Length: 217
Image 1 (cartoon, rainbow, N blue to C red):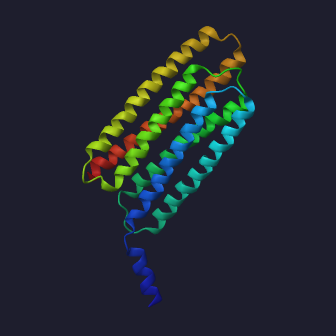
Image 2 (cartoon, helix red, strand yellow):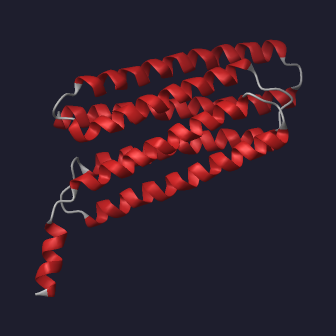
Image 3 (cartoon, rainbow, N blue to C red):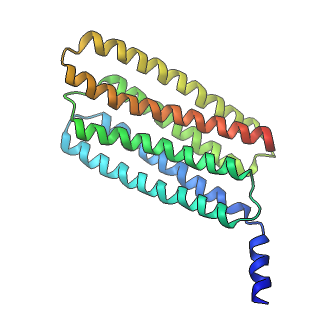
């Protein structure tokens, strides 16, 4: 009897459990995006360290949540979407968080003399990404009822990435025209690259969700 019960429990669908974990992952990104706006908005090194520590806490929380998704995939017989899509989505959500953390870490390590206005602009776009992702993840469990909302959010993620590309390109032009200190050029370029990578990863989240829409909506 214990063996039968064990087999039965493995075959029982536990679909809903993935949605709350993914939702928590999106909330981690949302919290970190607010912290990043604060981090790039001031030049005090000690304050930068404090913000990095808080962002790092969110990054660690994200790692725990993404690992929970992977563990659940290994123990769930029936999943709401393809295992590969769930795995890819969780991994890419974690990537967004990792790039935010990486940018905050570089601000602390490099301690640039100033943060350009474009850093604030990119941080604001990351916050917009985070809001879109949070709303899109909210819609995943009701995807088959109405996919229009989630499609619009995926399109918005793509549009935000285009804006981020423009901000980064103008930053690079201004950087090489105005900054005469070669070391500062390297510092700022690397920080901004990590911020821009976060927007790239956010757009990738939208592409993964679009793939899920095609399959299941």
